[in-house]
Amino acid sequence: MKLSILDTAEAAARTAAAQIAERLQDAIAERDRATLALSGGRSPLPMLQALARTPFNWTVIDIFQVDERVAPSGSGDRNADLLRQALLEPAAVPVDRIHLMPVEEPDLNVAAATYSDLITRIAGQPPRIDVVHLGLGADGHTASLVPGDPLLNETRALVGLTRVYQGRQRMTLTYPSLSGARSLVWLVTGADKTDALQRLLNHDASTPAGRVERPNALVFADAMARP
Image (tube, rainbow, N blue to C red; front, side):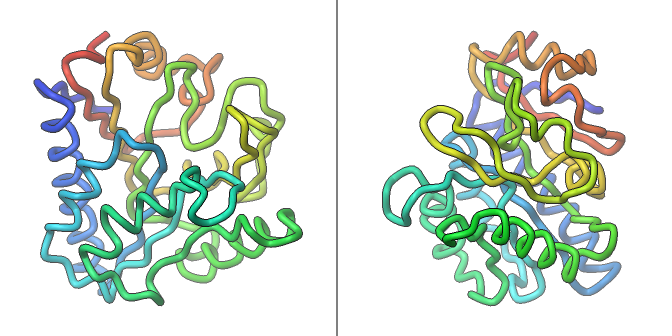
């Protein structure tokens, strides 16, 4: 794991975007296509906006979600809404390359299995997503792998459902999905993340983030988050 500290959250986001872009370009050069999974929340907004300004051939990049709240579209709780506004629409990403988590389906267990099958069909078996972007919560959660949730013990399913966390159940990629990624790019900003970032760097398995296998991980943090 390689840590880079930038002066500001904006600088950290731009640098993370540049590294994601570089790895996607490498994948395209090698295989004529690439796969990218993006986490939710508001902190990656500048990163998404920077990616939207990158002159990619978006017709060969498949975009997945790392996690999503189980909520109606347009509710203000959906990660997909911000993803559309910051990246998908500004970059004119083709609809057939956008793979949003099906959290409005009546049977969420079936929906999670369907999304897992989709990832496998596109990213291989076992799946090797080229770049997975991750955030870090002050409580040490990453994706929607949160402290104390039974999903932390999942060793086979690629996609799972959490218990209710901060008012919403979540659909999320699991450790098997994350550990198979060719590259992990963490973006960590804010003074409230200092302890969680230190635990991540220490590989502290008492936190969800500390349990992620990360031989090819890059961490971009702002000065406020510095341990």
